[in-house]
Amino acid sequence: MESSAEEYSAFEQKVSRTVYFHNLSPQVTESVIRTALDQFASVKNVKFIPNYIGPSNLPQCALVELDSAKKVKEIVSMVGQYSFMMSGMPRPVRAQPAVMEMFDDRPIKPNRKIKLRWLNPDEPDFEVAKQLKNLTRKHTAEIEFIRKLQLDEEEKLAKQQEDTLKVHYKKFKMIDGIMADKTAHRLARKYNLHVADE
Image 1 (cartoon, helix red, strand yellow):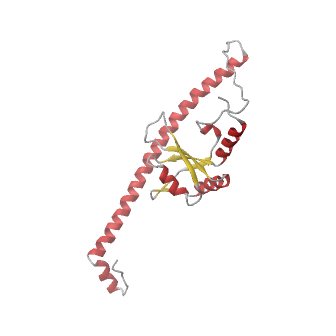
Image 2 (image 1 turned 180 degrees about the vertical axis):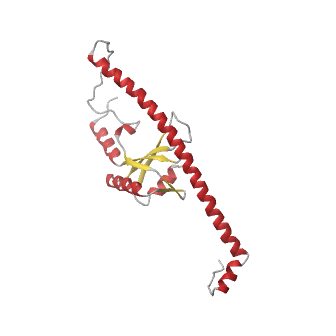
Image 3 (image 1 turned 90 degrees about the horizontal axis):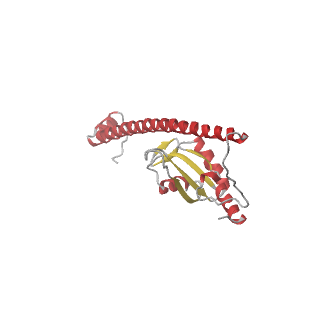
Protein backbone atom coordinates (compact mmCIF):
# COMPACT_ATOMS: atom_id res chain seq x y z
CA MET A 1 0.00 0.00 0.00
CA GLU A 2 1.48 3.31 -1.08
CA SER A 3 1.64 6.11 1.47
CA SER A 4 0.64 9.70 0.80
CA ALA A 5 3.18 12.54 0.59
CA GLU A 6 1.81 14.03 3.86
CA GLU A 7 2.16 10.69 5.67
CA TYR A 8 5.73 10.29 4.44
CA SER A 9 6.60 13.88 5.40
CA ALA A 10 5.22 13.30 8.93
CA PHE A 11 7.38 10.17 9.18
CA GLU A 12 10.48 12.14 8.10
CA GLN A 13 9.74 14.65 10.88
CA LYS A 14 9.43 11.79 13.38
CA VAL A 15 12.81 10.37 12.28
CA SER A 16 14.48 13.77 12.74
CA ARG A 17 13.19 13.86 16.36
CA THR A 18 14.39 10.32 17.19
CA VAL A 19 17.63 9.14 18.86
CA TYR A 20 18.99 5.63 18.38
CA PHE A 21 20.54 4.20 21.57
CA HIS A 22 22.63 1.04 21.47
CA ASN A 23 24.63 -0.97 23.99
CA LEU A 24 21.80 -0.61 26.52
CA SER A 25 21.76 -3.15 29.34
CA PRO A 26 19.22 -5.99 28.89
CA GLN A 27 17.67 -4.88 32.22
CA VAL A 28 16.83 -1.40 30.92
CA THR A 29 13.12 -0.67 30.60
CA GLU A 30 11.13 2.19 29.07
CA SER A 31 10.72 3.87 32.47
CA VAL A 32 14.51 3.79 33.06
CA ILE A 33 15.13 5.54 29.71
CA ARG A 34 12.39 8.09 30.38
CA THR A 35 13.80 8.84 33.85
CA ALA A 36 17.33 9.25 32.48
CA LEU A 37 16.30 11.55 29.59
CA ASP A 38 13.40 13.53 31.11
CA GLN A 39 15.87 15.93 32.71
CA PHE A 40 17.14 16.93 29.23
CA ALA A 41 14.12 16.56 26.91
CA SER A 42 10.51 15.47 26.80
CA VAL A 43 10.33 11.81 25.71
CA LYS A 44 7.35 11.17 23.41
CA ASN A 45 7.88 7.49 22.63
CA VAL A 46 10.32 4.63 23.35
CA LYS A 47 10.55 1.60 21.08
CA PHE A 48 12.97 -1.27 21.73
CA ILE A 49 14.38 -2.99 18.66
CA PRO A 50 14.01 -6.75 19.18
CA ASN A 51 17.07 -8.97 18.78
CA TYR A 52 15.88 -12.03 16.83
CA ILE A 53 19.23 -13.66 16.15
CA GLY A 54 21.37 -13.27 19.28
CA PRO A 55 21.10 -14.39 22.91
CA SER A 56 18.82 -12.41 25.23
CA ASN A 57 21.70 -11.21 27.43
CA LEU A 58 23.19 -9.12 24.59
CA PRO A 59 22.95 -5.33 24.93
CA GLN A 60 19.76 -3.97 23.42
CA CYS A 61 18.87 -1.02 21.20
CA ALA A 62 16.05 1.52 21.39
CA LEU A 63 14.55 4.30 19.30
CA VAL A 64 13.57 7.23 21.52
CA GLU A 65 11.38 9.95 20.04
CA LEU A 66 11.88 13.38 21.62
CA ASP A 67 9.93 16.63 21.36
CA SER A 68 12.34 18.35 18.93
CA ALA A 69 15.16 17.67 16.47
CA LYS A 70 17.36 20.18 18.35
CA LYS A 71 17.16 18.02 21.48
CA VAL A 72 18.39 15.01 19.47
CA LYS A 73 21.70 16.77 18.77
CA GLU A 74 22.04 17.78 22.44
CA ILE A 75 21.37 14.21 23.70
CA VAL A 76 23.79 12.66 21.18
CA SER A 77 26.49 15.15 22.22
CA MET A 78 25.81 14.61 25.95
CA VAL A 79 25.92 10.79 25.70
CA GLY A 80 29.15 11.06 23.69
CA GLN A 81 30.82 13.07 26.48
CA TYR A 82 29.49 11.43 29.65
CA SER A 83 28.56 7.94 30.84
CA PHE A 84 24.84 7.30 30.68
CA MET A 85 23.65 6.65 34.25
CA MET A 86 21.16 3.84 34.64
CA SER A 87 20.06 2.53 38.03
CA GLY A 88 23.09 4.27 39.57
CA MET A 89 25.69 2.54 37.37
CA PRO A 90 27.52 4.36 34.54
CA ARG A 91 27.50 2.44 31.28
CA PRO A 92 29.18 2.98 27.87
CA VAL A 93 25.91 3.60 26.01
CA ARG A 94 26.18 5.02 22.50
CA ALA A 95 23.70 7.33 20.77
CA GLN A 96 23.26 8.65 17.26
CA PRO A 97 20.48 10.33 15.28
CA ALA A 98 18.03 7.77 13.90
CA VAL A 99 17.75 7.02 10.18
CA MET A 100 14.70 5.81 8.27
CA GLU A 101 15.97 2.25 7.80
CA MET A 102 15.84 1.69 11.58
CA PHE A 103 12.02 1.80 11.62
CA ASP A 104 10.19 -1.41 10.74
CA ASP A 105 6.90 0.50 10.33
CA ARG A 106 8.27 3.10 7.88
CA PRO A 107 5.87 4.04 5.08
CA ILE A 108 6.71 3.38 1.44
CA LYS A 109 8.19 6.40 -0.32
CA PRO A 110 5.58 7.89 -2.69
CA ASN A 111 6.15 7.08 -6.40
CA ARG A 112 8.88 4.52 -5.64
CA LYS A 113 9.04 1.58 -8.05
CA ILE A 114 10.98 -1.64 -7.43
CA LYS A 115 11.58 -4.08 -10.28
CA LEU A 116 12.81 -7.64 -9.72
CA ARG A 117 14.13 -10.06 -12.34
CA TRP A 118 16.34 -13.13 -12.67
CA LEU A 119 19.87 -12.64 -13.99
CA ASN A 120 21.59 -14.99 -16.43
CA PRO A 121 25.31 -15.76 -15.89
CA ASP A 122 26.24 -14.01 -19.16
CA GLU A 123 24.70 -10.66 -18.12
CA PRO A 124 27.02 -7.88 -16.81
CA ASP A 125 24.89 -7.37 -13.66
CA PHE A 126 25.36 -11.04 -12.72
CA GLU A 127 28.89 -10.36 -11.44
CA VAL A 128 27.60 -7.40 -9.39
CA ALA A 129 24.91 -9.62 -7.84
CA LYS A 130 27.53 -12.27 -7.07
CA GLN A 131 29.76 -9.70 -5.36
CA LEU A 132 26.78 -8.49 -3.30
CA LYS A 133 26.07 -12.08 -2.25
CA ASN A 134 29.69 -12.57 -1.14
CA LEU A 135 29.64 -9.22 0.66
CA THR A 136 26.51 -10.31 2.56
CA ARG A 137 28.29 -13.48 3.70
CA LYS A 138 31.30 -11.42 4.79
CA HIS A 139 29.04 -9.05 6.76
CA THR A 140 27.37 -12.03 8.47
CA ALA A 141 30.77 -13.33 9.63
CA GLU A 142 31.79 -9.85 10.82
CA ILE A 143 28.53 -9.44 12.77
CA GLU A 144 29.11 -12.81 14.46
CA PHE A 145 32.63 -11.74 15.46
CA ILE A 146 31.41 -8.37 16.77
CA ARG A 147 28.63 -10.09 18.72
CA LYS A 148 31.18 -12.35 20.44
CA LEU A 149 33.38 -9.33 21.20
CA GLN A 150 30.36 -7.48 22.58
CA LEU A 151 29.48 -10.40 24.88
CA ASP A 152 33.07 -10.50 26.18
CA GLU A 153 33.00 -6.73 26.86
CA GLU A 154 29.61 -7.12 28.55
CA GLU A 155 30.96 -9.82 30.88
CA LYS A 156 34.05 -7.71 31.65
CA LEU A 157 31.88 -4.66 32.45
CA ALA A 158 29.53 -6.72 34.66
CA LYS A 159 32.53 -8.11 36.61
CA GLN A 160 34.04 -4.63 37.01
CA GLN A 161 30.73 -3.19 38.28
CA GLU A 162 30.26 -6.15 40.64
CA ASP A 163 33.77 -5.63 42.10
CA THR A 164 33.12 -1.90 42.55
CA LEU A 165 29.83 -2.64 44.29
CA LYS A 166 31.56 -5.11 46.67
CA VAL A 167 34.26 -2.54 47.53
CA HIS A 168 31.63 0.15 48.27
CA TYR A 169 29.62 -2.31 50.36
CA LYS A 170 32.71 -3.18 52.46
CA LYS A 171 33.43 0.55 53.01
CA PHE A 172 29.86 1.27 54.14
CA LYS A 173 29.88 -1.81 56.38
CA MET A 174 33.15 -0.65 57.98
CA ILE A 175 31.80 2.90 58.50
CA ASP A 176 28.59 1.48 59.96
CA GLY A 177 30.66 -0.74 62.28
CA ILE A 178 32.86 2.06 63.65
CA MET A 179 29.78 4.21 64.21
CA ALA A 180 27.94 1.39 66.00
CA ASP A 181 30.78 0.43 68.38
CA LYS A 182 31.52 4.12 69.14
CA THR A 183 35.08 3.95 67.72
CA ALA A 184 34.36 7.09 65.67
CA HIS A 185 33.24 8.95 68.81
CA ARG A 186 36.37 7.96 70.76
CA LEU A 187 38.62 9.10 67.88
CA ALA A 188 36.62 12.34 67.60
CA ARG A 189 37.15 13.09 71.33
CA LYS A 190 40.86 12.31 71.04
CA TYR A 191 41.35 14.71 68.06
CA ASN A 192 38.79 17.30 69.28
CA LEU A 193 36.40 16.75 66.33
CA HIS A 194 32.61 16.79 66.32
CA VAL A 195 30.82 13.64 65.07
CA ALA A 196 27.08 13.75 64.42
CA ASP A 197 25.09 10.87 65.91
CA GLU A 198 23.25 10.25 62.63
